[in-house]
Length: 348
Image 1 (cartoon, rainbow, N blue to C red):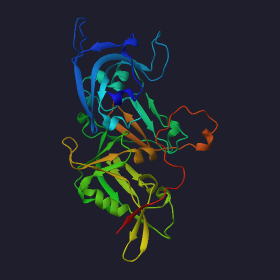
Image 2: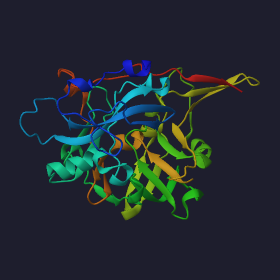
Image 3: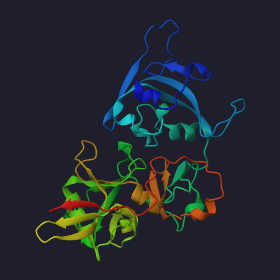
Image 4: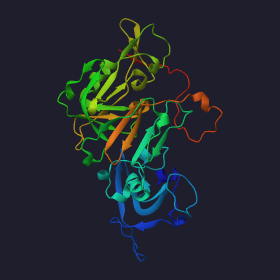
């Protein structure tokens, strides 16, 4: 399909280590004329693919000697992908890092296989998300990177690990000093998700949150980056007394909104939060928040596979100027314009 050919491809016939599999994990018979296939829903699209067992490594290199950064894994090779959304994606594949129960079979779990077959001293991976395109983001396997921490990790137990998500119980949510009634009974949850670019909130409370986090900008400037304009805090109260506090720098849309009043011929510039409405799902329920990139950029997070817990610590963001003379080892896609964004205009 066109969505497949747009991306870098894996050539199965060039791999000496790949083994074709049926859906049950058994090797495909030599005289087989048809292969088992699977259809997987991904966001608004769908992927069709076949099964293989392959050696997957974190870094390139020769396979003659045993390597600690490689593991055997069941992989789905996509043969067809829908135009939407895959034509717009820059990445070529997905490496799932959910808990074991989210995998159809343990062999599909990369970190589960890595922990079991490679004897990791720490069954933990750490995640650092950079604020600057000049500084590469990173993930570490077999422990976390203490160089990225400005404070000690505070650990929170995973809530209902049998669901497979890195999900936490929310004691409460405070928006601009107001405690959300939705979570007063202590039955809200928050999911730490590196694949979500925004903060997610139940649709039932997003309008109220937008209202509380909006700020009027005085003097009506022609342009502004709203991430630099101060605003109230958004606090997620977790178990074990751990708070994840998000400021305007993290939750704001960069682009402001200029409201033009047709009757009075006046205008007001407003800075707003960027929130993703989360609909009531069968698994997560109606009270699920998502700690996406805004939270995971401010906090370094460590994911303890064995003890089923997540650690939060304020991240150290390196000075981008230190990387100006270093050859980049990472790629940047969809970078925003370098100057302050021009506000969008709305007529009322």
